Image (cartoon, rainbow, N blue to C red; front, side, top):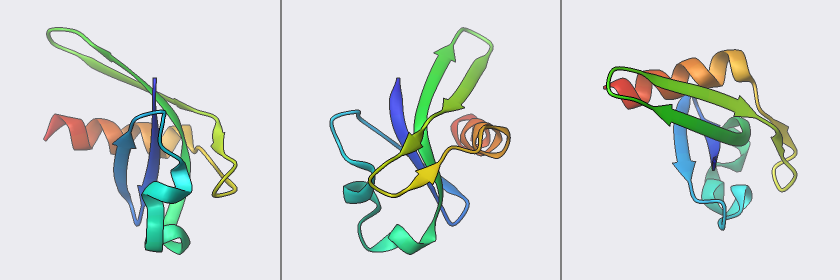
Length: 76
C-alpha cells in the first residue's frame, strides 16, 4: 500500500512515510483527490485499488476516476 494524490489529473504515488500535504506542496489547491493505493502486479496484469482520504489535505479518494488514471499512468 502506498499513498497518492491526483494533481490536475496527474497521479503522484509515494511512500506512506510522507504526508499528502507535504508532497502536494504549492499545488495543494490543484489536488483533485488523495488517499491510499494498492497495486497488484502480475506478469500480464496490473490491478489498482484506491481508497481512503487525506486528512492533511481534507480530500477523499475517488476510486472510479483515480484507479483509471493511475492504471493509465503505469501502463505508459
